[in-house]
Length: 249
Image (cartoon, rainbow, N blue to C red; front, top):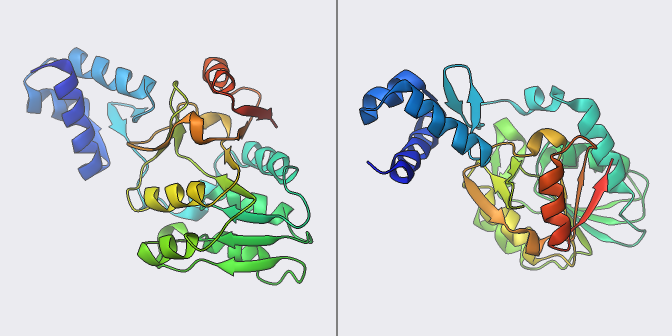
């Protein structure tokens, strides 16, 4: 079996199971454990999975939002604060789902702006703010991740023209491609990009490369990326070379 074919099948296993072990994959494909480790390391370098002891994994919906929120909270906070600086009074702001975007919403309280979102966490931050005009996009609720998705969400986005969109991501590949792990979220992210004059990705440094099986967009669709100072320098150079403004929080 060709290396590329085997690696594609490894990713298929991850989509189904969420986590795979070296021993299981070695037996399935009839190759040595060292070969599987090389495959997993290569896929991890490309941002397609996260290496864990004895195998590989991707983020799954079963990880509660509250748990994700506690991971790298200081780094996410600084990214969110820097992102809020990009919003001007009167802007129509689209805010994606995610823990960092929820922090961004908190820093937008008291601003004379319109916010449209599919994130229940963002709604919780802004629902009682008299200054922010809040538009709820609707859709099917993913309770475990505080988000709304589906055709209704996408149809609502088609009616909106935003000044700026803040996008979350599960990972940024070395070539600047923005990734996500959940198929039902990707169409909503793409619709947000289409509905916005500017798209800004909020990604703490662990998202370089992070994880992700699905492409959201290339760097050509981005206006900017906000991240921490210790994010992968080579990837940031690729983004700058593509005309993306890189802002360090």
